[in-house]
Image (cartoon, rainbow, N blue to C red):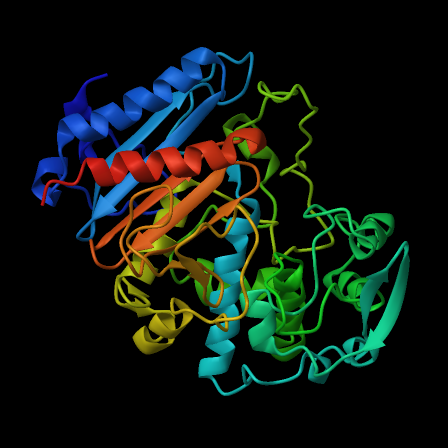
Length: 409
């Protein structure tokens, strides 16, 4: 692979305007170091770990590396492309979190507002406490707030994060269905007990799906309409939506039918199917360049190409630690040396984590193998896209180590 092919001349044409580019060495990167990163990913493709990947690294407002490796789908002759489309799952969450904070900036929401103010069904919730093999329902010490939802301290959970009695109830309700509305989904979640008292624990959860419903209630628009009008269209993220049109079928990245490491079946949603539920927690389809425009907006303090999405101080507030000292996340999603902000994980220590990074950098990922981070100290962001659920933690660690190793100044 020709290293010199990485700058702007090779960036594929797309309906989404491309960010500016520069040679990696002009941005303080080692070209050889970034090539080592691509070579490492190519080895995984060659081993059959993943069908293909797209990786982008940008610094100082310009893309320094943009590579597509492998095949777009297993058994296909179609190479992975810079314009391939991916299910980004929970990388939807930061976009919806920005939407909520836009409403906060307009004075239409307070972070301290109780959730029941917008979705009354949450007024009667109880906490489910396991006593032996039974679940006891206990009253709330305080209501869930909007801030709780943003930082995943609401007591809401995910059915995929454990096998407790509350999580089994979530599974029984089949909350991952796409044939219910956001309002119906919120009512179903409200009918179930919380896994803990609001504010007591960090539990990765359906909280951002509930925030999506709050956006609908406050704005009077569907979540998809609000995101399009207020974030996606202004940022010219022209290929990000809750489904892809049929004429984009040939651009969809696909996973292996069976995970190459575990042998388990891999089942992801059909991106060509228009869902009733516009999942604020994980429903968007996007491309590398689209998400790069969102990342550059974040890195630039809430603005891109003269369009302001969010105030710089609001964004800095979002990327700060929001968990109380006694709230200790117990999840691989929150490595040592990290805290959680409003929609992002935030690095708080230079050490502790098993990968390089800067204090203050923030990130999130998607369960199918997508990942991004923003590093204000290095004026840098990176986007990694794949469709390999079983390999996601491996690649999240690998790319951070490789990118920071390639920084020379």
